[in-house]
Length: 151
Image 1 (tube, one colour):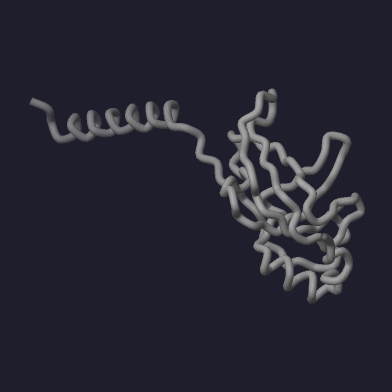
Image 2 (image 1 turned 60 degrees about the horizontal axis):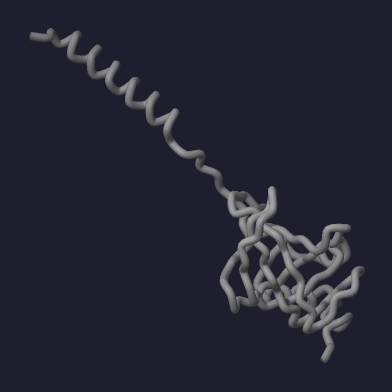
């Protein structure tokens, strides 16, 4: 028969062992952490393009870094140091293991602040917004008229 002290010692050792096993075997919990800041005129100026686009396709790709190609069709262009027009299709590559994955809702419309490099267009979940928020911010900052018309 175990004494009161032995029972507590046994319980604590069992608890410690259970915690150690769960710490080793538990998957990493990562969360996307974006700081929500108001969209200003500087936000429009610091990106290569500000657009509203419709997600039209999500496709698995074989790439050592990115596993998904996400295709958007441009619906409205507010700014653009790089040429992008209404009706253009852009492909963004995304990592399926990232905690800040881009949305994958085919048919959804998103406000995108885009950047461009030699590999193409890219964005981040943290620089995306709703089409309504993008339109209101563009009107408030004077960017609503810049490149809003197209075919």
